[in-house]
Amino acid sequence: ANRGFALWSSRRRLMARLRAAGHEVFCYSVDDGYRAPLEEVGAVWREVPLQRGGPDPRTDPALLFALRRAYAADRLDLVQHYHAKPMVFGSLAARWAGVPRVVNTVTGLGESLPAGGLGRTVSVAAYRVAGDLSDRTVFQNSDDLALFRREGLVAPGAARLIVSSG
Image (tube, rainbow, N blue to C red; front, top):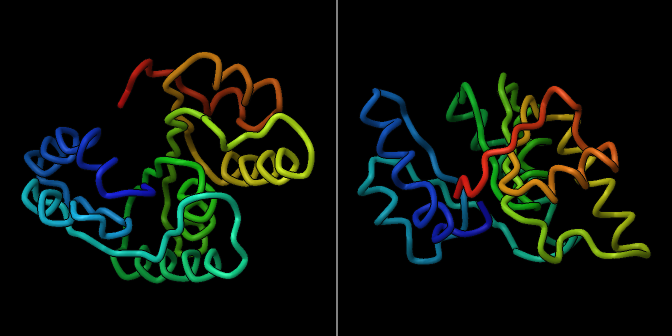
């Protein structure tokens, strides 16, 4: 996710249930003060150099390589990404690292899909890459799901709507 807080606030119960079921859970994000709380629920923390916001050719390659190294070292069976930048770069890194299952979660498009121009073109291309590389894409609202279907950003059989899954 793009912030440790997002993982802690919306995913800590899921992580605790996975740990209770005997699974190893890893978190990959920036250290924004939520490392210790996530480790308290049993997650293994990995800090990655993620800069929030739009594409940044100065920092995004470092994120891609850091995720690829971490995913390969941790020998993951499945990775789930939250937020736009982790979806795109995380999906690329996961496939490059040989992770067998990739799930992306669209938590709400917000400003990540501009109305027009070059920004929209880049965003659509990035989401298409993430969709092509994922086994499943989870949506939290029907409007985002409809938009992704209309734009061809997700395969019909790969999309799932789980309302307010956060």
